[in-house]
Image (cartoon, rainbow over all chains, first blue to last red; front, side, top):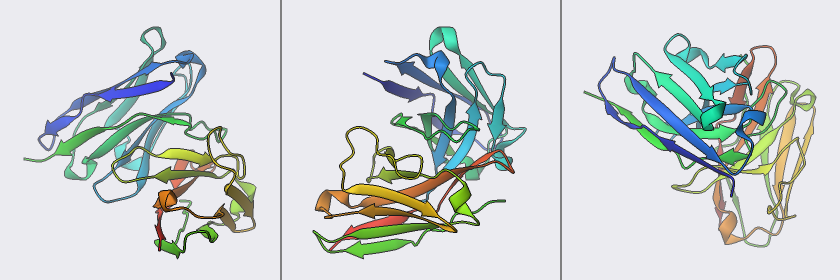
Length: 120
Length: 108
């Protein structure tokens, strides 16, 4: 079964850091672009970051540039999102999703999401 | 930056046809994807590359894209189609993924 499972969410103070992980299974992880998409409570979907199969290309939404870093470990079938200098407005459910390339691929597989709450 | 505009809500009676629009400057030149999200669940891809359906998505779901508007059409609407729907494109000028604000489909 094709599956993405996120972990690492939780409560963090403003200015703090958190590292999200996404474990992939059921497909050849190294062959796919991967992305993070978030959704603030009661709001719509917001793309966060995308990484190419070999990690050579990375793209970020402007609001997280310089604070968040997307990475992957193809040997471990895992995707990561290092989040630093967290702000209240980063509070959201963070989804790991397969796809989202610069060639316009859709997000065809989504994880169940992990909640990040930034609050003092 | 590129923006996608969706109506906040669309209402339709069971058995009728729902049309959800996604407006953007010359969106017809871009590839549009559509997602369905039910409360408390992750989004699900329902249309990709403007009009293709993933396996497992009913034929009642279709898509089109031309000019400044992309449209998701749901025929013979069922109660189970009630959900939020989001359109999405890749904006080449900014190297960003862009989502529409979402449309809540209510089945009367």
